[in-house]
Image 1: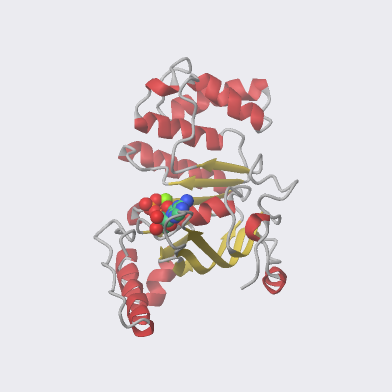
Image 2: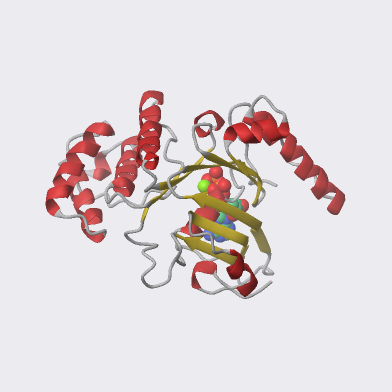
Length: 299
Ligand SMILES: Nc1ncnc2c1ncn2[C@@H]1O[C@H](COP(=O)(O)OP(=O)(O)OP(=O)(O)O)[C@@H](O)[C@H]1O
Ligand SMILES: [Mg+2]
């Protein structure tokens, strides 16, 4: 394995393979290992991403599905340039995340992190202004988009303080911030957690709408299989790799299953079997629960 540089780009052979300009995001041979920083424990590595390949086409919604702890947020943090891979290649909109001029992180990407990163001492309006100015939105547009987003996301008036909003309302403000500057790449880490089903469908309709003209690519992570069926491409992630990546119907057809849940179960069992063969003492992890993929953190 080769050494890494900012953005995780490191391997010249892999770089040659990443020339697909029709893709919004390309990930090749990605590995990410977290190493313990404790002075008192022997450094133990946790390989969270294990040779993952991913391709997100422009103008499409990519639904990244996987159990808790399978590495979705870790992968996304590397794609938006907030973290580095241990090795492997990432291209976002043809550039390298984290490289000067790539716009990632920056105006080329709208990112809603899983953990909220808003300022509780700002009002909603101040939050929009702050993030809007950072990403180059002009004042007239800002006012128009702010009122549109407040209405669309069923949010209280713009003078309300972020710190006084409910957790769900704060997540919707975070979602709005990601959309505000209309970026070509939108990355949403579990935006629909705790969202009312009517609003959830409205969010999906909006994503389908903005991807329809081919200008916006969306990556959305979720535990909910049903809503992810609306994506153009699904990535089924487990233990740091994608078990399948294709249009939902094609995944069903290829694996001759009636539901994505069954495909997940089938591929998870195959992966667990392969792992058991490789490492005789590894216990097969729990299979995903109905309608929602399970938890891998304890594996
Ligand atoms: N900063 C970190 N340092 C060390 N380990 C980490 C760090 N961030 C995540 N991990 C570990 O990496 C693994 C994958 O975590 P990650 O948050 O990427 O999973 P996830 O698929 O996003 O889960 P969830 O669905 O619960 O959000 C977990 O075992 C987690 O404990
Ligand atoms: Mg996560």
